[in-house]
Length: 137
Image 1 (cartoon, rainbow, N blue to C red):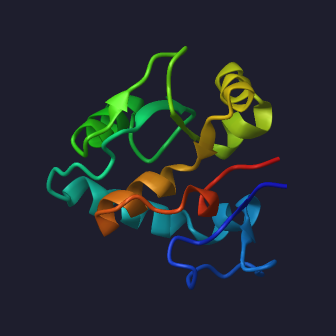
Image 2 (image 1 turned 30 degrees about the vertical axis):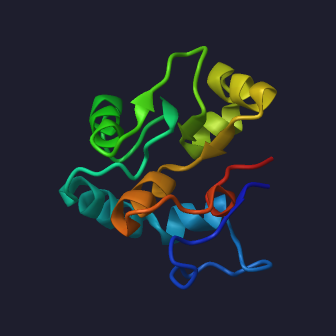
């Protein structure tokens, strides 16, 4: 079962399991928070917060993939190719379907996280602990 902490560790109405909420609980409890965080991240001035990341996207997000690409570039990340990337931002559906990008990332040992990770990094002006946002089997 996929697990992920809430963005601030306090919010969310799901039942905590070992300090974590399941992805299903997060989808229900954090939908509004996700939109709010997206809007906050979009409003942030450019930065180098995501410097060093070579990011790929798979799935549907709060913004179009073109919009997500522009967002991460404005905060220092580069956008990877289908073959070369160091971080995969995925929707739960894509993860659950084990799409080609998901399988490729797993095979390469690349972190697979939800979009909240990007928003929290940008809003907090620093990279967050990927483990708190990781999509896992």
